[in-house]
Image 1 (cartoon, rainbow, N blue to C red):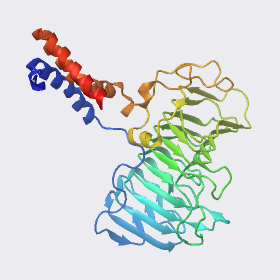
Image 2 (cartoon, rainbow, N blue to C red; image 1 turned 180 degrees about the horizontal axis):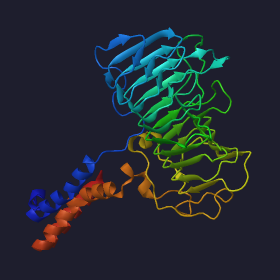
Image 3 (cartoon, helix red, strand yellow; image 1 turned 60 degrees about the horizontal axis):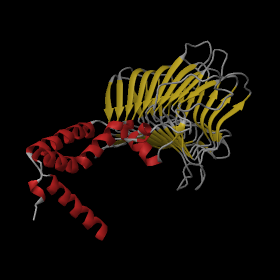
Image 4 (tube, rainbow, N blue to C red; image 1 turned 45 degrees about the horizontal axis):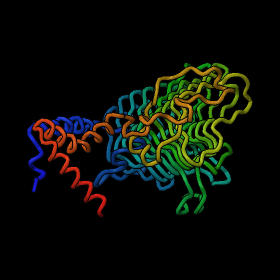
Length: 407
């Protein structure tokens, strides 16, 4: 009886190893992850305090700041060159963190239960606010705030260069009564809200790799995940939106609100883009629409061309989008008139190419897996062809097919 191990020659083994090598390289590549991707909040044995005022440069970490419903800001960062990480800020009737320094990083922090007023008498209590210069908010989770998770600047003072990455901003019905809010009430305005007066220099905001969900049926009308307005330049990339009334609420200004969004996916939301007040030149690339989405574009007080939308397609499954992120499927294509014509897509069916649904958006991963799965058969073929044992090859294949169809 012919034994299978006799088929594999050194040549077949070398081919198999050669194909496994690129797979190992691909597996080692870092995956794009949406939302928080590291532990958030305090580490073991944190220092517990009621308020934190930072007026000196340095690193501050592992702080449990519980305001016990203090009617003031829990954390104030007034100094430059500050890193606040692995801390939890909670239970305030005002803002969680206010930033007025330069070169500040807030990393791996959990901010929640900043609740002012009541559900029916809404008052602002923001998660992070202030007038920063060069602020990075990374790997943070913010939820249950009666204002905005992030807002710059309430007084329309100068702020600039804010980067938000790998964060999760959400709200929903309260599981327990807190402050003057009752069980089941949903606090919150928007996840991110921008304010910048026309006389101020244009402020820059970059949001990427972040998750926004639950921003709807809250304390205000037209509640949105992103409320981007006034004299700003905002870029939003590789973000996921789920269960929101409005994902992007974009409002124009005299000097034009500049917004570009690329490679974002939307699920179970009423409106993807609500365009107001003559906002113009909005750039959208690689928008992916999932299940349960109502209107893609809703216009209020608008006329003429207002946006350019290219490479729109269907979203991958929600968990897959969070795991691998979204990347552009093809190079941009200039539409004739994006504001009135149907949104152009990368193919006639309105779907993005197969590449956009593969892990990390790469066709190489599937190709490498396919090669590995075919290697035993290729090895057999190589061996029998090289050795002239075609009869053995036919015998092995015949036995394999016979076993397969006899089951």
